[in-house]
Amino acid sequence: MSLNATIPTLEGDASFGAYVAHPEGTPRAAIIVIQEIFGVNPGIRQKCDKLAAEGYLAVAPDLFWRIEPGIVLDPDVEPEFQRALGLFGEFDQDKGIRDIEATIHHIRRTLGVTKVGCVGYCLGGRLAYMTAARTDIDASVGYYGVGIDGLLHEKHAIAHPLMLHIPTQDGFVPRETQAAMHEGLDDHPKVTLHDYDGLDHGFATETGKRRDEEAATLADSRTAAFFAEHLA
Image 1 (cartoon, rainbow, N blue to C red):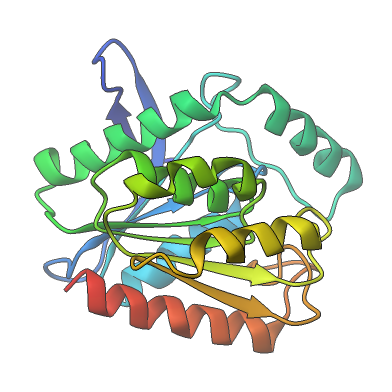
Image 2 (spheres, rainbow, N blue to C red):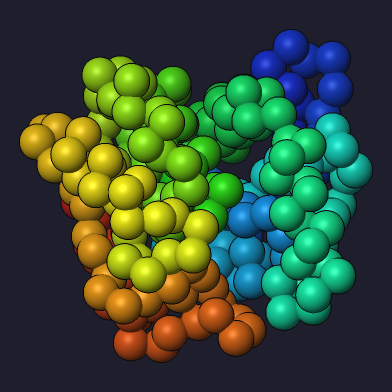
């Protein structure tokens, strides 16, 4: 099943779909899984299922719903990859953050889980940074977030822990951007950056050609320890 739940917008005038994976028993905390440009696809749902197996309530909101609800794309299929690049340009990121904030509220108020973190990939990595700066989320993780150098003016608003995973050969995040991220964030008391030498964008995807097993396992172990500490 692609989407199995609905979440009301902050305004309460509409709702959007989400994939929710429930743990056995009481959740230790909740984690919002923020999609890549490929929608809430099988890889994102698998991320949720893994987190649920670790005891978390995992929620992946359909952030492209204003463009078209239920978009699911495969990055290894070239026409679908090209469509995803177009969706990145169409997507209203400010409204996306409000939908993530609505998801936080829904988890806390309706689902009754107080501690909420987020983890995002690609576009979702950028949105994880924005979520850390613009909401009261308890902890955030971004994998290969794009264009974060253009968001460094918001770093003063990051009040809760943020971890960023940076592959050094990222085709969508040039070296200059990586250097700016380090220069702007290395001394931030709430931010931790990890570099992955020689790795490219998408190395921690669950499925497909982009995955690097060793690096993905390392990054995910760091993420697991981070959430265990900050969502306890």
